[in-house]
Length: 66
Image 1 (cartoon, rainbow, N blue to C red):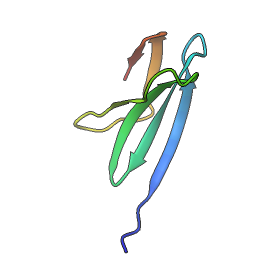
Image 2: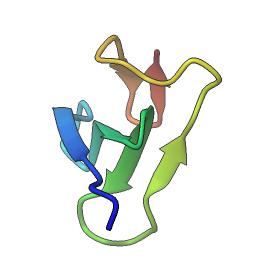
Image 3: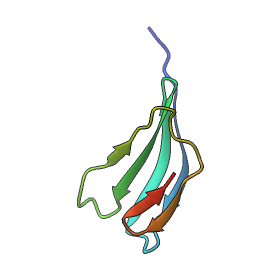
């Protein structure tokens, strides 16, 4: 059996509190995940070539800067 490690870190609310974003790391890669907190849509996963880190912020209700 292969041991896998998964971490979730740096949760941040959108300006209105309607969305949540966090960093999810597993198997050597990091992704930025966003989700509407009311469950109205699926999570959106943003993956870059170099991975995501804690350096992200909400710019508006619908935009993040990484």
